[in-house]
Image (cartoon, rainbow, N blue to C red; front, side, top):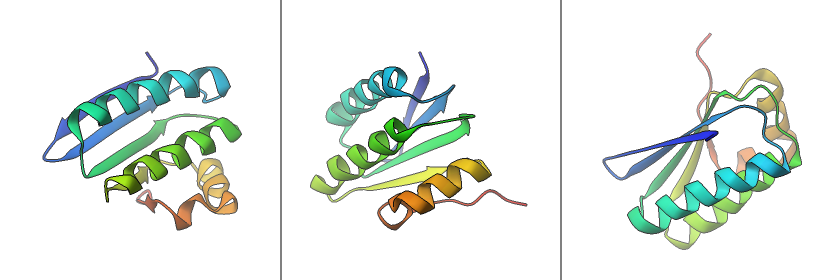
Length: 105
């Protein structure tokens, strides 16, 4: 699977891996949403460290989780974004809706 999930102290962490396109985004969405529905975390932390590329499906994946967590008064935080993914997040407006943890250095 291209997403590994872990839960601790109300935070669901989704470690995403590989390219995110319309095929993989669906698998990731289903895994994240299933765990989110069961656990009802207050924060979703999406880790993109192992994601070399994503298309607009990745933006859709993020926006859908922002909407879902908004219903629960929760928050989505993005981390591990490469320079190109960070630029995509900024240009698409996603950065205004989700928290973004910047890489050190």
